[in-house]
Length: 402
Figure 1 (cartoon, rainbow, N blue to C red):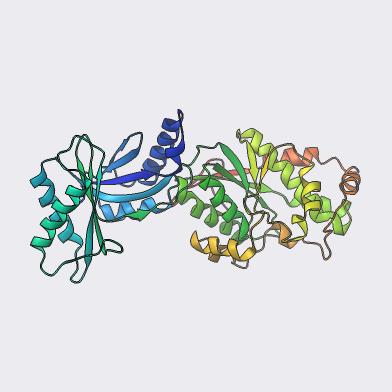
Figure 2 (figure 1 turned 135 degrees about the vertical axis):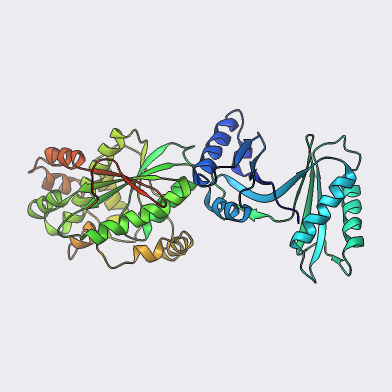
């Protein structure tokens, strides 16, 4: 039986790029290489308009599954490469068809002729190959609109490529092609989705999580690590910065009126995240805010919170309904982790009646009685950095995680 010897990768939005297309292609190649690190025999050939993964004996089905979440891929197909001898091509197409055919299936041939010097045009390729398969498979029927099997015969200058299975890719832009940003990752449903959508636009994310022991448990910390692991499947690894936040939160509770504590807390989180961004050369901050969803996500609240930094704040979910966000959370397999009943620092200290329309001058006044700078500097200094990978955890700064 014939076996696939390569996987054909088709570019999506990369194809619209001009002179810098090669930069995006290289980012995609690197993303694929990271995700497929467990397949040492593969070789990746990147061309301007497509990419090939040469399998060299590796399992095509396992690799097909791994490619599903890689941004920058429009679609991909397991394929075989044959010479441009017509008889050789016909026999290879028949063998490939028999590999996937089940009794009662319909089929069609789709010809793509990039080599205009090839002896057959697209119509002749369709007729020649279709006739050959019909002669050899009894009772087979053609369906040109919705076939069960579509044999693609692609004739290029260097060779002919045959495929009959097409998988939809994740789309978007390759990881890291749009720069780095810091994701404010809570334990909730929204922020992992915001991270996912940011990564889809080519942003390399480093996550920042605020941890307030003993008010938040070790299990809440593990919950965030598990969320980061899910996101790491896309890029091969995610840096997670865990910020000790207890002292600052307790100070806010003492110095700021109850209905303004949420606003002040978010402002301090934003300041700390921005300092970590500077330390690790990020260009923006990503949040999971959706307009009007909670008290800290009104226009007035975001205006007061944004005042503490000048860094761009990206909010991928800003116009999305909660139901849409939950659907994506299910799709990327973070939902069930997010709903584990372990509270983060925001939910533990949430005031009974948070201000939905805070005044900037008031929160500035309340904070003016305390010098928060040394506390912010200390929190940044004591932040733990973990490198989260899909199957392993490497702690860069501490010997034991807990």
